[in-house]
Length: 406
Image (cartoon, rainbow, N blue to C red; front, side):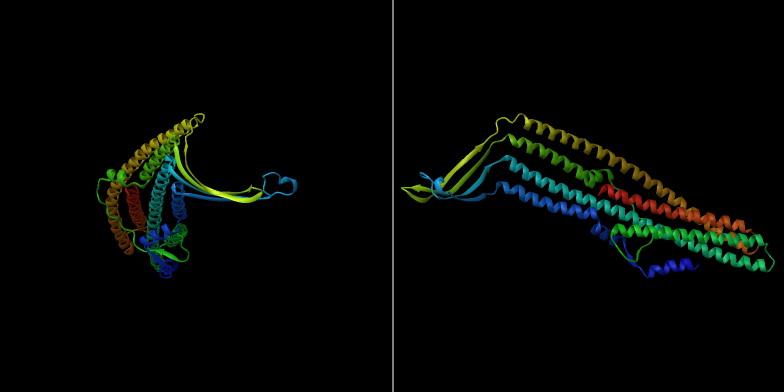
């Protein structure tokens, strides 16, 4: 009995964490979520970089040359300076405008990827949390079972000493007590290992216990297929990938368009005029039209490759929608099946509990054998563990339904 006392004493010395608090911690500390946020910041900077192509570009260059001896002859100044200050402004460049649009689409895609990462982290956190509640219920049950067999051993020992029961009954009672103790220790170890995995997943250090009880979640019947197609985060990501692929095609097509830019310069250089060195400077203004007439069909090849990538994303989207709809149907079937199993399991627990009570009373008055009590206790434990397991599976199925439809 001391095992179960020490186990539950640790609850009072640990920090209790609700499911909602666990979800917040997991999202905050998950490495995939952190990296996804950094990718979002990186793409925000990429948009700034793309927009720089339509902003004025100002450059300055300066040079100084010293000519010695016979190198400075004729009109060549001995000390020569030259500089140029140039301002360029893009008037029209479709490739830049498409690149800006592409960067914005990529940012939206990364935000959707982040949302999908969060949904997956929350789903896994719920699985961990419900598993811990289930395993803790198993520990409680096995603790009660150990208490039962310890009390049974005490009664059998008294009857053996009084000469009412043979030694084989005492040995059997001791064996059942030790078996119950071993099963409890195993369940506690399993629970503690799962707890350590959970703490690592949510990024928490120190004593911790999940707060709450294992109970059935509420199920609401909705148009889940429509919700899946509208809200499923994986499908949203796939759709945005397709949009990005389409934008990439337009980026490649933009290479066919001419570019127009205006420029203004202020420049000066040292010249020899009338035997004297003088700095000559002045302004220039103009515009440039650039158009690549032929590039060896490189543009056509790039456009074709982009279209192939777009078709691949289109097929990926169709396949993902089919896969997610299939998972939705399987999950809904599982939920209905588990609901029916839980109702049947509740009746089984009631029946086995009553059977155990009657067997225990009969054994107390020497009407039943210890084997009958042993069978009754085994049936009760199996029924209750199955009930707890069904609740766990049902809650996980509802969590998966939420994952698919949000």
